[in-house]
Every structure is written in structure tokens, then in C-alpha cells.
Amino acid sequence: MSIVGEHVTVVASTDPTKVGRAGKVLTESAKTFVIGFRDGKIRVEKKGAAFLVSGSGRMVNGDDVIGRPEERLGAK
Image (cartoon, rainbow, N blue to C red):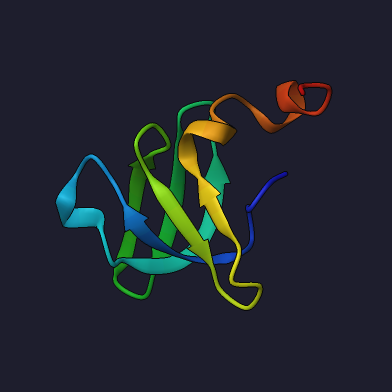
């Protein structure tokens, strides 16, 4: 599952300054998401974070998506 291109809200993070930020997921690396906003972009560590996907109301636990999307395809 990839959330690149989805609009998300950071609902938990090890960095409290990122909680509540909402924007579009621009890119994903093995350990982070880059989320774009009108005033720029931020990098959010997946570990210890949770993201609410707008529209679907789906909650994504960052710990569950650590690793590159192509590496997760066959996992579980």
C-alpha cells in the first residue's frame, strides 16, 4: 500500500511540531514521507508516526509501511 499522491494529516509523530500538519504526500523513501503544503514541504519519519488519509478516513501506521513500496509488495 502506498499513500503517495494522497492528502494526509499527521496524527502522531516522534516530532510533535509535525502533528496536525496536513498536505499531499509527494514522495516516499524507506524511512520517510515528504508531505507538501502551500508554504513548502516537510519530511516525516515513518517510525512512530500515524497518518490519516483524507477522503477514505483510513489510518496508516508509519511503522507498518517502513521500507520501500516495491519491497513491501510481497511482504505479509
